[in-house]
Image (cartoon, rainbow, N blue to C red; front, side, top):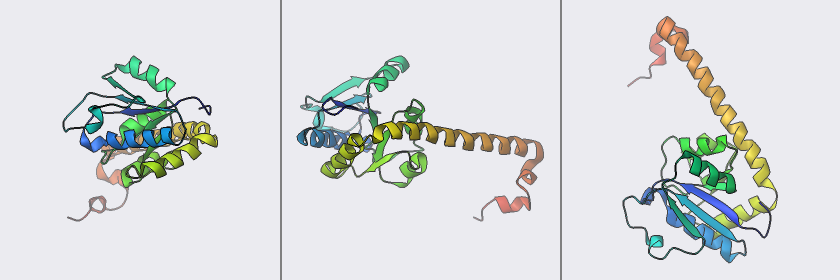
Length: 192
């Protein structure tokens, strides 16, 4: 990101209430009001639930609809960060997928986001667009986007190491049964 140029934010997922894209639009509007030229790019089909921002989309918003993998990769390569304003998320795999390419992630405070991102993300409160915009401005201006890209790749390496360790444990389990976990096999099953 270079000051004075547009800060390009990417959001990915079906446009529905739980993704809270209205908060992403409000945050982007707060950036623009603070003098930061910003663009919000949403990739995803329109799903269920009425989204008022779709009635009169602001000039900074581009709705891409569905993009195939190469189209999404190309767009992500032009954006500065992934913005998630989701009210609920499963495991958070899309955040890891985007970090694989080194794109920093901005996400809500909350357990699933903290678990998935560790210290590699910038955490915001989507219900506070002005406060979130201030945090994002500081993040962009102090050069943290470059270090966040490196942290993103490190976070993916952390998850890959965890997955590799789980694969080893699982293969041992297949060969040795519950005794592969050591001790009393009943101890690995939590009480009901």
